[in-house]
Image 1 (cartoon, rainbow, N blue to C red):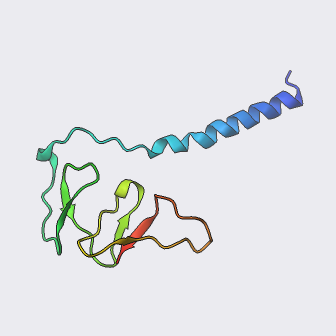
Image 2 (image 1 turned 45 degrees about the vertical axis):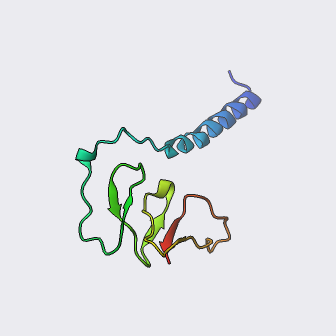
Length: 103
């Protein structure tokens, strides 16, 4: 039979393990580039930029469109624009994962 102290330690260990598991899901793995699988960007209102893995091209994001985010998944802003990330209203600090807006 477990003593209360040992049971508490097991619960704490389980809590630590469960807390660390989601962090491992933030890894981006780029496969070798196969340009034949890339879709050609069409009807871009601005320039064309490379996607997050540097293989395929995509339309650059325009004014007031989302940008940045985890690994830049929301895209890069067109020339003359920058991705602006506003501080969260709740006072939290900005991390590298926030989505911004092209301005």
